[in-house]
Length: 124
Image 1: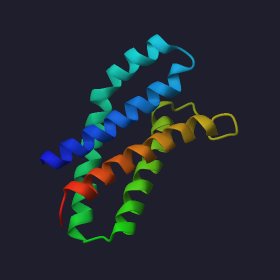
Image 2: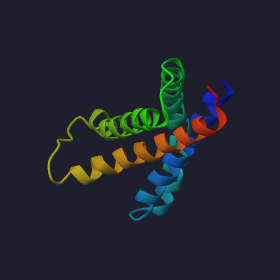
Image 3: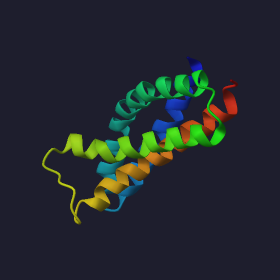
């Protein structure tokens, strides 16, 4: 369980830093406060996702490439899907695709961070 928490912590920390950097261009003060408020929310989301992903990786004895694909697809798809759930009025069009892809990229980087931690510290 310790590894699930640490992988989630690192992934949430990377997510918050990326989101703060994206928002820093428009409003630096609000970005820092918002990032600090987002840390527990993103950490809980990462914990909820880390346990099943690590369990699937160990239970099915996935190879390195398969586990990378599992983590990356999960991170990108859920990262891109979160704005659609948070903002129900958001539609997928040419104006909002950049906004959606920013969250997808953030999920991608968070999942890569968690995967690196899992790969180095959890033996199957």
